[in-house]
Image (tube, rainbow, N blue to C red; front, side, top):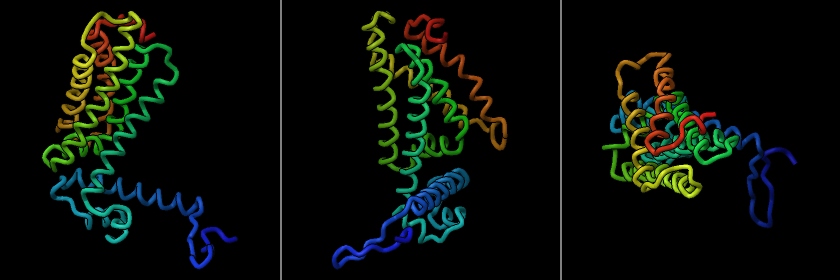
Length: 227
């Protein structure tokens, strides 16, 4: 049977995708998303069009619609892409850690690195979501809730293990995520980094301060998680 050939099942003809075909489709989808990131960065959400995204990606406008039914769907996919990249980075960094606090400490540089190396995507999602549409604002709030809930659970576990003093883990988690968000957004908004090939380094330099500040804020013995 030839790769990607049509196969007859009774009275129906079914096209079976090969791995090569699937990889090609995924590569094109990624190219569209990367082109969309550049367009949203240059034109803003309201100024961007599907036609401009298609031209940037080097494909027909109809091809974009095969993957995404609207500009809104493209933007939503970018939000999901950033969320997934941050989560994957965090989970990978935590894999070699043995304690709750060391996992939390490892999560900070892992997340910062994603934002630092994908600045346009981060700026599109974190800044343009506000004001783009109520649906995107709600989606961004859900992302905040996800990360705050994640931190809250781990702070509660660390408390139960006697590693942290008594506190409200929900409030502490919100403060933790808020501190992180403020540093990231300030960096994203800074005009000093426009066109700067070393812009990522200015954010990466904040990692030690972020780690120490957040751990100290919840009363953690800083030296232990950083060993």
